[in-house]
Image (cartoon, rainbow, N blue to C red; front, side):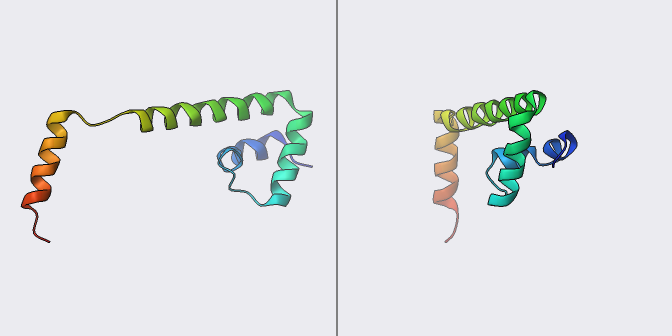
Length: 77
């Protein structure tokens, strides 16, 4: 059985779905029994969602887009 330290070490891998199916089952079993680790996973999941939302909602200013377009025009192929 896994302990809380192992959950903390694999927290981002779990949230990013970068674990094996077997390892994910072990992690989920621990989370089923441990409220503290469930809270950590919940916080990490919310943080990931916020970062993703901010990263995808921002756009470059008109001035920056013009500079980039100009630089691309002047860049040799």
